[in-house]
Length: 190
Image (cartoon, rainbow, N blue to C red; front, top):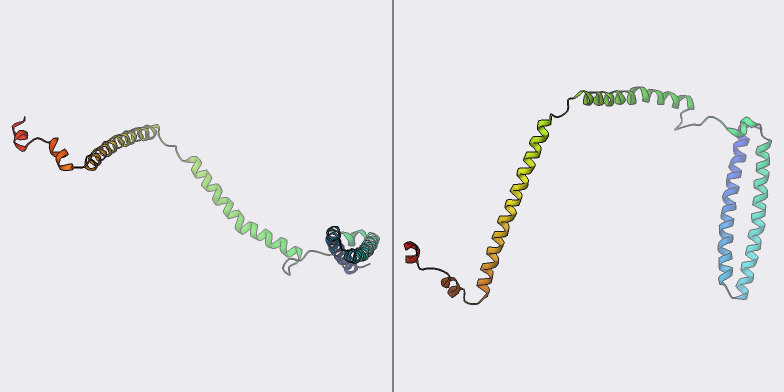
């Protein structure tokens, strides 16, 4: 038996397996239809189709067994591999050669560059402790400035609430004038 014949038998076995799966799927659908149908005429038709599918399934399983026996009778070297793999029209030796060239001319320089970067970072001195204390002091000043701004914003909002309350009470002119002194009294300091 030649390698071409072994490949043909393997292809036949794969096709038979695909057909068997298709028959199993159709049989499952027919069974679910049979369970849902109450019409006696439809039940009879579905049972006939199931009997046909059962016969077909037995025939496919018999054919798969036959191809399996043919493969087991083939010489061991032919059944295991039917030839060297071909990738994009290239033989296995050519694929190996291209892979080695790619590794040498692409991956090796990238690896060396990465190693050089790691080496340079390892030899770099760390930050002095003074930088950490200076950063901590700057953060404390920033925190106190933010607290001060928050207090001032609260004061502004209190003033706005007060003015809004005065304006909503009715006569803003009399309320504002009642709380003010006369200009002469302000000059005199009274």
